[in-house]
Length: 155
Image (cartoon, rainbow, N blue to C red; front, top):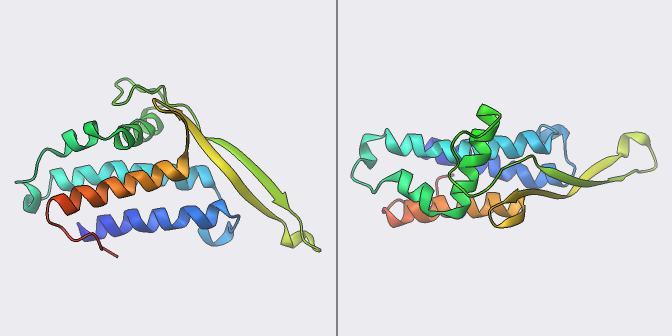
């Protein structure tokens, strides 16, 4: 389980550099990196559900359903997987990420950098910053593990 939690933290750590335009080292596609984060984040529940050492914990599905951020995360993940949501956890009609970017050009064309000023998605809570949503989801998992007696640090 530590590996899966570390994987989630690793994916989260890539978001800020990608947002700031450091593309070559971090994949270069903010939408791809965000979808990857939300997919890994949501599917951590499967590792909890199917790991014998966590069998006496409360229902992880209840944890997902009781957290607005995790419900939205689930819908983002499932919309990506199925194209259209057949069953929603949130009251959101999850769409696509909306990007607002700017380009800085240095003295040479190779010094051009595109930074992402904002990435939003419409959710049951209104228009949300995807980075803030990702951070909230990570914090929700930290709380869940902490409440069940597992150390927060997994890196």
